[in-house]
Length: 186
Image (tube, rainbow, N blue to C red; front, side):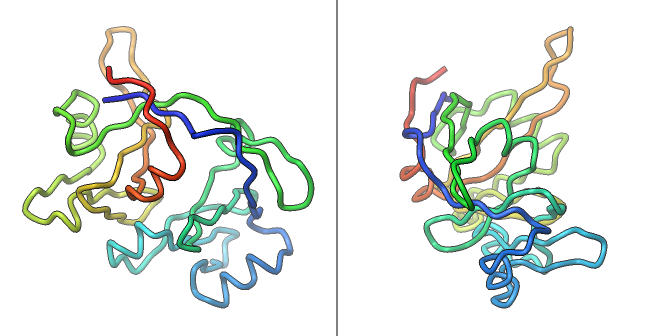
């Protein structure tokens, strides 16, 4: 594993699901976001599209959507978004960089990855480098190639030191290189 940080404080556009917004309306029209009847939304991120899943990542009204460099949306849970962004005005936010942990296929296997494979359904398939990572995330299946990076949002350890839960996501390598800097290896 290694520690990474967003490259710098950066201004981003973000759109709150459930609010009237022409950008959200356009993404719904393009099929990048699917509004569900129960106030939830399916978000078709780059990784969902790569997996071929028929359902997008599940998000709720009040959560936020940002766009990656390919123009595909990805969801941010409202609590994560609030902890990592500062509102400027309108749809403009300042993203606050904080160190987090990451892992890539070039790294040695670690207990956190073994936990994700054993407990969270992560599949690592060296025989299929285009879909090396496959994972059930946000109530859908995401896939990423062997060059992608697995980002740990949080790792919860018990009093005994055993891993109890992990929140994570997959980031395609081009997005990772654009948005993150490696701080150090652990």
